Amino acid sequence: MAPQGEVKVLGAWPSPFVMRPRIALNLKSVEYEFVEENPGNKSELLLKSNPVYKKIPVLIHGDKPVCESLVIVQYIDEVWKDSTSILPSDPYDRAMARFWAAYVDDKMFPTMREIVAANEDEAKAAAVALFKEGLSLLEEALVKMSKGKKFFGGDEIGYMDIAFGCYISWFKVTEIVSNVKLFDESATPHLVAWIHSFSSHPAVKDVMPETDKLMEFAKNVVFPRIRAAAAAK
Amino acid sequence: MASTKKEEVKLIGFWSSPYSRKVEIALQLKGIKYQYLEEHDLKNNKSPELLKYNPVHKKVPVLIHNGRPVVESLVILEYIDETWTQEPALLPSDPYERAMVRFWCKFIDDKFSPAVRKYLSLGPETDGENARTEAQECLKFLENELKGKKYFGGETIGMIDIVAIGLAFWQRTLQEITDKDLMNKQDFPLLCAWAEELLSCSVISDNLPPKDKFISLIRSRREAAAATSK
Image 1 (cartoon, rainbow over the protein chains, first blue to last red):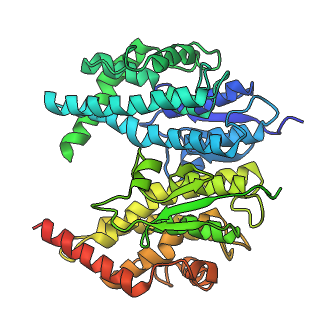
Image 2 (image 1 turned 90 degrees about the vertical axis):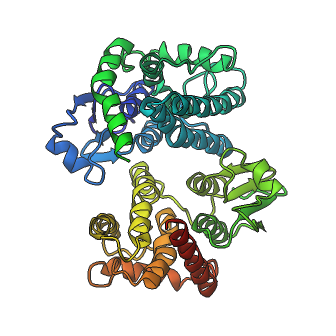
Image 3 (image 1 turned 180 degrees about the vertical axis):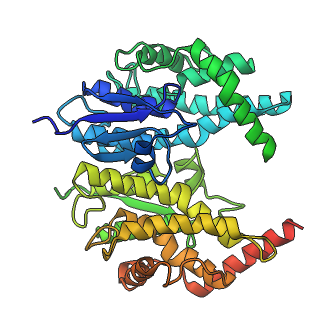
């Protein structure tokens, strides 16, 4: 029996975190209403549904809100359990997926911001080197977790694919705007192939922002904000 | 289903680390036998085992189950609950309630603990009003979450209680030493009652750092921090 209650996602098109529940719902073939929020003018519904952080994404299932993108993905996986599984079934494999998902949020995304914020060549080079160290760990993780298949989740997209793949457009934009090369086929061949497989997956391609559109938004809004925050410290 | 094959469980930890103690509490609540390996010098001389089993972060705690390491305390706690399914369940079975538990655990680690630590670490000369307000707002969220329950987990200790243990001992001790008014009975009656309830359980109190030794450690760290900031 399909779980009761309509599904809404409160989000915004540029946000990598918002992509996560959308990909998960698409994988499960769950219909949902996407409500575009304006971060500069948050709706009453958002403020009421996420009083702790007042941030997107928020999933509203029936009348129950779920917040924090990876918490939402796990909720989706557990509610619509008759569909394709997002987390693996073995506890150790689940722990690995959760570990690497936390790693990309705690290390890779902040390092990307450091690349953007760097206003000297030395600082930028150091941040790029740190980012690439992380990529080589993730390359190893991909080889291990995929067991020879295309995705971290194996034949199909899984938890870690969703957690990491949502950043792809942002990494591309960072490469262009900061004039750096982050992904290198010779250094991380599996990751480069994975980027292509993930981006073209039917559950992903319609919710991944186009690079050109995102670049304008990044250059005009987000990257100046990142640089200002870094300068204020 | 109880496993009948030989199981080897080890934990690399550090006596004063709340993250390390949280994992020990979870293992003991479930009645899991394990070998404890203490890191003697986390700062200057990490053990070869630690570097081998946690090469990415080089931190405690590290759970090693039949030779395979699991790191990061929230990941370890879920691993324990999913591997050893006997009572008590650390997470509820309903997906929405599980989402709420995960949300609050992440809140405690990402927002609550840093805010409380930040306020309690401020020196006496610093104006801590903003930091105090932020810490208290975080405390209010948890106070509301208790809603008259004995524990965050209801009648039994659950994952949120374990993850929030820092508040019941570590942060409360820091509060006592710094003589700062943060978590008091008037503003946070439920949290204070919860902390007392938790500390009266032997599985919790047996797994806390010895208070005097811990107080000495905090004092020496604060003196060192004050010296380097001059």
